[in-house]
Length: 198
Ligand SMILES: Nc1ncnc2c1ncn2[C@@H]1O[C@H](COP(=O)(O)OP(=O)(O)OP(=O)(O)O)[C@@H](O)[C@H]1O
Ligand SMILES: [Mg+2]
Image (cartoon, rainbow, N blue to C red; front, side):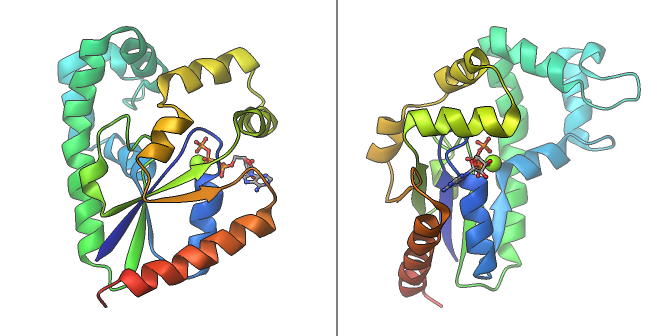
């Protein structure tokens, strides 16, 4: 099956684009959702995290201490690599399992940090959602009510828009309204159907 990797910077419109493809009956797989599920209570990855990083990475109720882990990997590159080494093969495997039972012509695999996590090999083509940086920041402020400083520090951990555009097979421009967005999705949908072997 043809696998389209959907990526883009924070707030550029990946989730909005995913929903538009979903409305066209395209199956959507979401790396963030998968990684979230892999660290639920009772999942083996959570036990591995406890063994590698210590019990302080779990809350009293046994759930993952997301804030603690986020802070740890923010300041410690080795810990970040270790966490990636635990989760990435599991995410790859789970997404592959989910794809294996699909019967559609193509699917969208949403991986917000596709480039940052070197996950390009998971997909056949890369679709980047792009948005000018002022609009991007404005939309995130409105959606998440975050201070500008925090958005800027998240942006600093992500590859640049120029890098994404240079490594994209297809680009959706999302600096304008939702109608323009839906038109671009429809066009790409027809294009992906024409590429699909089914
Ligand atoms: N074309 C558009 N016009 C107006 N608002 C938009 C448009 N596209 C997206 N938005 C709004 O911008 C915000 C960010 O969009 P969305 O959540 O889809 O981005 P995202 O790339 O999934 O973000 P994240 O990286 O945080 O997951 C949302 O509130 C969404 O409703
Ligand atoms: Mg999103």
